Length: 189
Image (cartoon, rainbow, N blue to C red; front, side, top):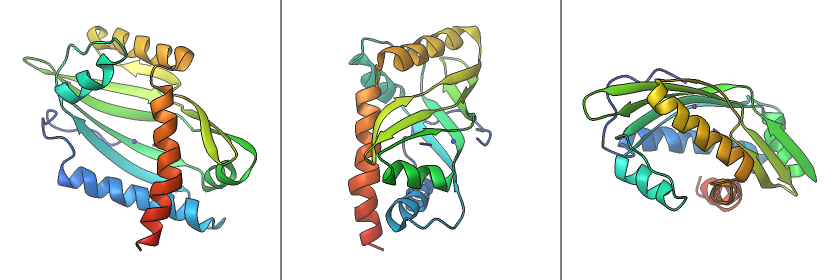
């Protein structure tokens, strides 16, 4: 569940800057309030997120899946929007599917001598049963990037949607967040 403003400057090797962590916490609080309080009235979830990953973190995360990363650091930004009713229905109904409107992730990926601008439009789909995420699809709709990286993104995105390369990890993180982390976060307020 999750980012659009333009990313400026080159991707920084600094992962999870204080500014990124603060913005993430604010977004987490917004969605957790919806999940925990279960109030049907109020604004839909909307948040701008950014994240910087070092080359070593990216490579370490995909090596387990027998993939390689031939680029450098990456910094991505996205405006995430999810209807409040979809969130509440996913948590309360026996079965519910959230189909997000297309959302564009804007990234800058470092190479040895330059930076590539990469824009990936996604329309994620999440299937819930009994208040827990059960399936997720990235659902890449469009990639605006140089050919050198566009093919790699399409390949990984298609493999994920058809074979679930990262599916188990994604589902576990969603469920842990919506369950334990939201409950804990709201209890501390």
